[in-house]
Length: 492
Image 1: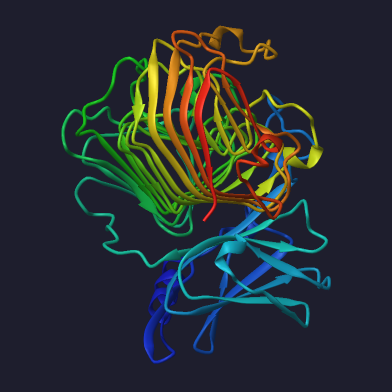
Image 2: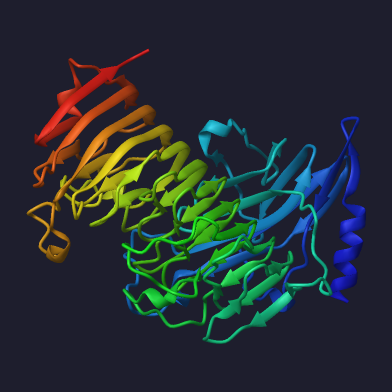
């Protein structure tokens, strides 16, 4: 019956909008409101037709005791996912009829204006977006709208080399699903798949693809903090950093939601293309996305509880991502004790829409910086020609940047990482905006050895709490320690 309903909605989704053809596709929910939100009701309207979009919920209480987040982390995540083209109107109501007075749609850079009328929040979208709708009175129950592009080339169940999960709950058990070279795992909209996926350790040019509009959930897998076998999506074989994959190895992940992981969400040593994936995590060590050299991470949404975007492989590109930083980790992690040269990385477009730790106003400038962190370098490795541009932080952070060639002496919890035999040669920070002044200044610490230095760092159009950073005022925001040379500040 649910498959019939889905087909009906797919057909009815094609409507005329503004003289151009548009479409809206919503997906079937789960029976008895399973994993559903009791707070929010969402509908999507186009050309006078409205369709309900099922709202999911993940509660912090569903996690296990190990590594449980502190009280500053929200109590739940609520989200809905649909696909569209053309223009649409999203409408939100509270199920209990409570009045809503104000609503803000983040990221602010998208300039999406929400109107509130008759206890209904409404806003329009003209292109796909992953947004947070911040409602007054609901600070611990955020609602996320994952408005996807319409899918192309949807595989069928009978297609060769396709592992297909349709609507409803599927439990893969405790052992990860093994996926071979050239196979596609498709999670249809309305699919809620409990389990993990391991992609083959490819040696050829056949990519493993994981895609769709469904959900991959680790909700029933026990947490084992610090154990790297608990990735939600990973390679089938782990290797040391000194052994790099074949340049032809590829993993493509697109469109899905990953929720309640017991450990990091997505980690591969292969070349990764991650587009429009959404990550929602609770415990410590639930890092976000890490790929091999020349990886691309684009249009993704991360609310994880440790380092979000791993930025320590040559050629990595991070494009137009959104991060809500929780209790631990940094939004962009350049590395903890990395041992290979890193060159030519680019981050272009990052919106930080939440910063839980930043609200605590902790005076500590030697930890894992909130926005960009590099903690230690090993084996004479060098970071060269790194560009981080168009970053917007909407909340208060503890610290924007913390780049260290050697782990801080104050950090007594990670002494095994302290080596400091490496250097940074060439970094550009361009068009960085923080709406509020951080609790601590940024620190660039070149106290490593052999050579342990940080050279040629350029800051262009850095604006903090409305103040443009220049040579004259930089010392109040950015601290240099040790062997640091060639710091330049420009304002256009």
